[in-house]
Length: 402
Image 1 (cartoon, rainbow, N blue to C red):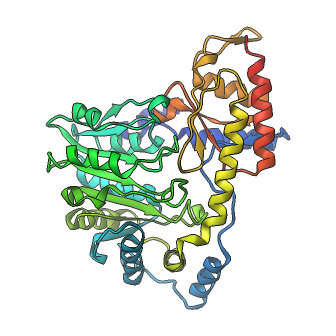
Image 2: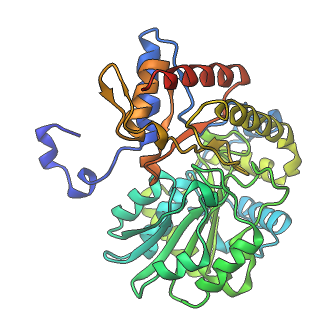
Image 3: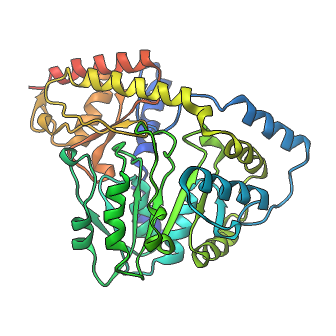
């Protein structure tokens, strides 16, 4: 933060990092405001509009006067729709009482962590991870235990790595599939091998963040909670932001063991109470629809992924793998570390991102924010024309590094 008035703030807020994705987005917005033609590939936000039938449902909710306080964990019929969705799409059996609806999946994760983690408890986080996981763990007084991966194993942890990271203090693991930032996707076999380790420690819990579920190119999403041996240890988090392009509607949901759902309701009751009534009514409509309604969006993402991978593969020194979901590519750019331009040395991925912003006017996010200092995150949730232009600018800028 920087001001000497920060001394009056809590240690909690002073130890909190600003979100790198939001910070990069802010920098690119400031440059755009100065008239600079910046292409921002920094935010994880679909560039599609919400399907019309969901908008209509929200308008009807306003006309039907859904304007009063609602139950803290969400309307009963929405929780029933979520139960139906979990059964239909994931073969997971929950009761409505095990579901809590929150103001975004981010609040779900915060509720769960604050409900489970005591100061000193260890929370296992596979890297690369979504930036907010670590900060929420720190806020709860937990100790993040990072498991490193790399591009050669598609940024996925193994059962052996998980077992080696676990100690008597291990309380929780948080991971995402498909993953933000890597786009990696855990197969059923990979999840089962992790479940075998998790099942050995009954006082250990897992947040399975599945917000990108419908944006996967493998054919079928797999949930950790499908394995009976760990069903009572897994909390599944999802929402409508990514699949239905409803980021601004702020609606996420979780389902898990009853005692955790009750704790999250208690926690949320003191922070926000129930989430926006109109967003809840619109979400019922979204979840009751056949998931195939977003197939066109998914096809566009797949086409963009292949376009960007093809362009990046033409750039010497940029190392890629093929992400199977989400809308990110997480290339290894360590080849450029130590190179210079006009006397300025590129020491790390953060330096490279700043260089590309200033020299190429393309905004990316440093992999350091996600726990991998060798990589950068490229969001391909942008038009094909923008992506082609951005890749051309990146290629030209990188060619100037010697």
